[in-house]
Length: 225
Image (tube, rainbow, N blue to C red; front, side, top):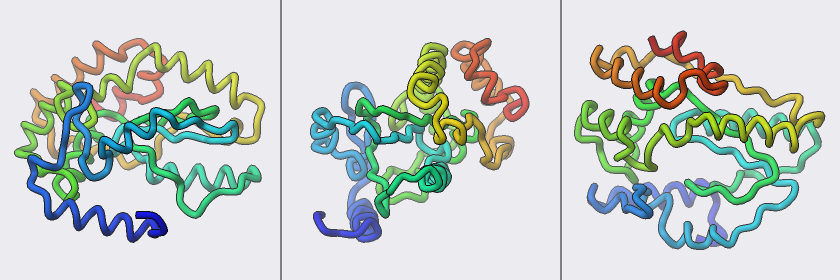
């Protein structure tokens, strides 16, 4: 695909996805499901040897947590701070090189699940969800694509991010402009979750994040109950 524009690559991937059967659109690697088109095995193999540069900034997010929106915000911030950016940021699917600066985006899990459900059913490179109930069950248990959402939300990771932010960005122009905030529209989960499903998600959230700093930042009780 050398020499192709981002739009041409995206179109080519969509066309390839439409030719695949649902059972061909995902593959399992290290107990995690990946997209055959978006995250082929050769890409993950090549990323093992990728070394981040000192001035790299890595944006990390679980799918459908607002990463595309945050790319636009981050580009404006970095341009204001004097960074010279490529036309399109390189997309590194589901793998983290040792970047010097890392911005992690979180979204409440109920709205994430709903957004991901609709995205899966509208994206030709991903298999259609059998049903909302089956999709949510896989999402909660970690059996769906890209693994367990709860692994992206842990107290240890929250503390580590705070420490890394202080070491790498505290006192810098970029650090002053970055905040752990969420401006995504919330609440659509109420149109999809049954009462039992909502309670199940509440219990999973409490087991993993209750009492943590990150859990407080997500304002779960405000947006998810």
